[in-house]
Image (tube, rainbow, N blue to C red; front, top):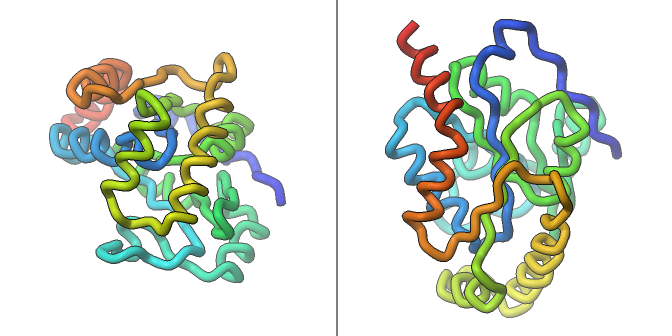
Length: 211
């Protein structure tokens, strides 16, 4: 399976705000930071909804949390070149479709993609040109506590997530992979760092709404 290049945008689209790739292990606090961002900057950000072949968790909504699809459906679209990136994790497929990103960009919004480390490396080989941000826990011990407090995982699932998190954090040390690494040990401080790196793009998006 290969990742096809993201189609090049025309000059007018290139002037719009750049997308944002947010990466980091489950439990690092990405969702909490995104919720604050979306609340404080209404209509400025749009969330790219990923596809997955895993089953929905309690409370998850199809089309909002994920596009829940069968492995056959997803493989067919990947083969047709409809995905920017895709990866397999714990026996399930995850991926970002071109359509999901283009739908956000068509509304002059900053497209946010929540993507794992494999996806980040795949997107580096495309023309998407996003801002790359890694959100990380202060330690694996803190991450384990956060995941246990959620009570959404079996012990085996938890172990898999922690193993994946260790690999994720090690790979994220690669020089030049991210534009910003946020250590989320203090939510307000982490949020302030996130807003600062996105300030220019937020301004662009707000100005395009006025024009």
